[in-house]
Image (cartoon, rainbow, N blue to C red; front, top):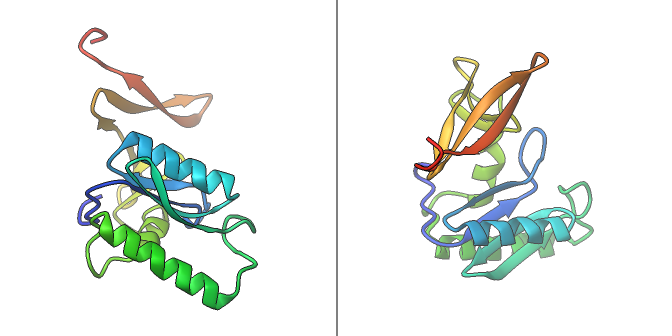
Length: 157
């Protein structure tokens, strides 16, 4: 994500408008997996990971969006997580978790992420994306659109 600034570790959240699926950003696959797993084990929440260590988590076990904690406790934990994310390189002035929550909101113009993949909202098109050796394509099966990852290493080209 351009401008986000993350230089190490990963952050994950189950607060991701409108569908509130898990969304993760990171620079390391293993840290991203750990952040996602921490949120899963907490039955929802916000997590920050670096170097294979869970630095902090705000559990949100009520629908992945709410907690029985007091408002003051939530505020303190959220501010701690924001400081931890800033320590991973998230730029000053960016709320690391609200940014992730809205990057998945498919009704705001520009590029958005959802369960179909990367969407150009203005053109109403699903875009192909690639990460290293894996290219993601979208396929229609029975009139429905599905995304798929395919290893396109030199041996398979």
